[in-house]
Image (cartoon, rainbow, N blue to C red; front, top):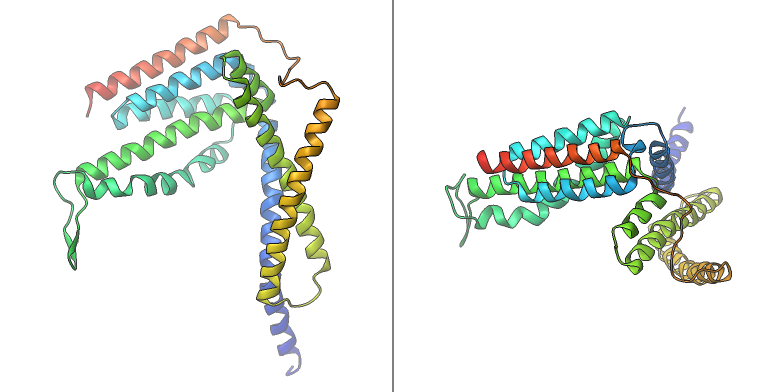
Length: 291
């Protein structure tokens, strides 16, 4: 009994030392699986999946424009309700869709709009003296910040819904159909592909590291390994970019990404665009009529 306790303690300390590797590895693998899961939704038989990608892209731009023009929470609520309805009709899981947007948006958007809470004039919520400075947020600033965060959340929800329900190749081709510059589409396509390649490479490095760790490692050794791994990954990235570009040139690449998919705008696509325009107009009008 007396000799077993230290062994258990050492085992727990060892697990704590290398637990971050397991968490990092699990996070990278989860990202890859999440990307595959998203592609699975894009190829399912939902309402948005059956729409023409060009119509979906135009509808997205109209809805985001309406979200940027409305100045009322009621108008944003109309747009978000329409977004949730479209996600439901497209068989996108509610929890998956909501968590993907609202877990990070309030934090990052809140950081951007936080100073406005204290500098917008109006009635003060409270006045807290901190030495020579005063911490006095206003009700107008809080209302504006809440509208800003809601607007960002609705816009990101619309963009996520488009990506979730549309294969990436169709998204890029839709951008070219809307006369987006070719260079922008090419950079976007290569960035998207390289993310998966880098995740796969990092996944292999971490898996190899974990399979070789049989004892405790010091904090300095772990930091040196992380630094060396970052340099190794960057070196591989440069080599991979040259290899990929050479492979593209050898296959006839001349600066234009070509897709064999053919699009045909149907009456149902036009009707869907009309519905988006009606919802967007209602959101803007409600924002003008209601505070």
